[in-house]
Image (cartoon, rainbow, N blue to C red):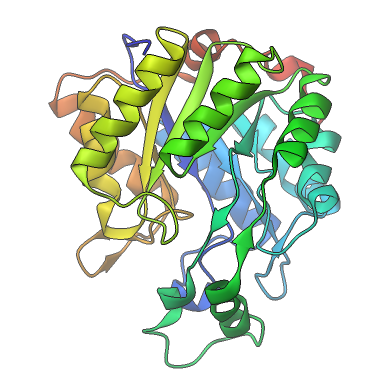
Length: 310
């Protein structure tokens, strides 16, 4: 693993897991998403992981027309690295999932590294009444849902986006996903340095246990040596302890309302920026300096903000 002199903070702004009924602070409209991303960058996030939502209902959407409404504002308002999802919303086709990244040609796009059972049905258990009729069925259908990322799908996404100069945040929900990445690396479909996002605590993926983080890192070290940067995210209450552990091990961190709606026990996070500010305080107390967006660009070898299409 490349041990960076400075820690890259990524912030996942809105995602496709949580619904508007779960938190009044979840960004939904293009203006809200743009403001949340700019504020997160100003708070210390170098990488901004972005989804879109239908403004009227908050339902996840991969319509490039929605991304067009907030990406230029984010670029004008801050120097953060834009990272567009190719995971999209649950149940979308591969064409839908790739559409915004193919239009925007961002510096980074996310790339899920394997298919797996993705169960978030319990996420709405405490919600007495949902604001929109799509929310409960969207969550409950995941009891019988496979998040599809076949080798053919991954290869297509890698090939089409690499041709546009886009690099990847490789999202690895289990140990096998690291081996999948190694397969594509061996075939030279992707080149180092690899930005490996190890994800913990999603039901169907690897659990949020400290031993699992150590095993994921040890496996990635064997597979990629000094050719990768580790980043860590964890769902819900595991977020801050786990990303802190990842940073202590020499890795980078991801926070944001996609992964966790809370700032502390029983305390909803008022914004993504509040989560970024909290992890920044923790890291700086540990004498771990924070990477600026331009420092992160050099570390991750991205093409630069001047070569995107928005």
